[in-house]
Image (cartoon, rainbow, N blue to C red; front, side, top):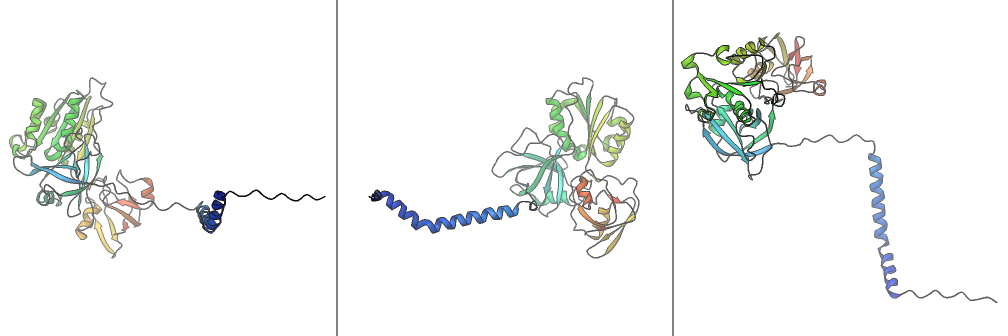
Length: 375
């Protein structure tokens, strides 16, 4: 006797509706599955592929000029106060740091920070007007006003106050030497050394008392700061700048080339004495040999004398090329070498950059008689 198959139990009406909706949506679900599968296959195809070229990151600050103050009696030095447009905090910095500032013309110049490192709401720079200079100081004096927005990179520090190794050395004494506008990186150092209780003195040299900026600000340090001027005392000698020179002295100097030469020669005679310095003009060419540079864009060939840089020579023919510090640390004048072997004299480019044929024409020269530059 055959038993009849039992009838399936009735499907509840709610479940029946759910199943019917799933059947209706099945094409959409299949399309979604196909899309996911396609994406997985694309990802698999990318495994092992070279990474995309890195994109440049814009690290510029766009700061507003909040204040403009004349800080020398001859009215040739102005200080500018720069701040975030929203009043927010600025990147921190240490004594000796500088900014790379883009002027309205597009020219880039370096200016030392001369304010208080503890002030995170503003930066201060100061600039002397130099009518026969490279144009940056005149533009900043004449074209930049309160309310203008300037593009800034940094802060960067190529002239730090190295105190960590000296804090427990009772015999170490600090001597600060500034010439003219070379006071700008030194000013924050004085404040830092005072805060740390370090023993220090300073010699500040200039053409005249009227040309000396920040005289009132320096008065707070009393007789630890000695101001001497050329019109009253003549050009300073090593004895004027470094009285009582000894081997436990740490010297920090910023000023014109002749001053630096005097200080360097004097300190070299005292083993153990330290010298830290910063220039505000291009260094003289040492051990220079004449060579030629060819500008690849039009085949122009220029002769670079033994006592001049490639940058100076090229500027005479191409006044519009980009440059800034002229000392081999900012990298603005970097060019690609298409032929010949560079004699690298900078401390900025990496070995990888040099291997790619990059060169800083403000200080580097040629190993051999000729370079072909991508200019």
